[in-house]
Image (cartoon, rainbow over all chains, first blue to last red):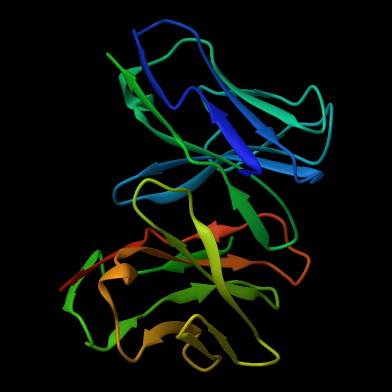
Length: 110
Length: 113
């Protein structure tokens, strides 16, 4: 049974619209992460969290917000989506160096 | 800050070929060095780790060796199969308890039957 799930799996949004990507984990990990994956850039960290109520900026946080309302849930929010945010987004949970990734969300901003 | 460099964007092999992917890193810490693998349609998953104490990690037929002199840790497998087709990422955790990973850009490995 999948321990990290993401929804939606695919999303098409319009420029200027609001997008919320959701992540749920059943690993009971304190730490959760949001990455984006782009060809030529690998995995880049957007935001992360050490536990419920905490969010921290990663390496590329501009244009993104995050919310961690509970141990299990971590959301990534694009208030004003832009075409440059077209990408595949991965959520992960983990303690230490081993992170468990979800299946990804493919976001297209037109 | 920490960085990792993978120069090979794509590698195409035939079954039973030898696989070698190099990765170099830069850090001021005593890192744990990692290889993650991403199969088609899935998220990445940890393949193996190498600490600066033990120099070598082995998992599922893959082996990674750490070279402090060249600050590199390459991944190799003696005989690849079609099922090894995937994207391989090297990554660095700043220490054994490190939570914030730095990933390389990934190497896409295609193994032809």
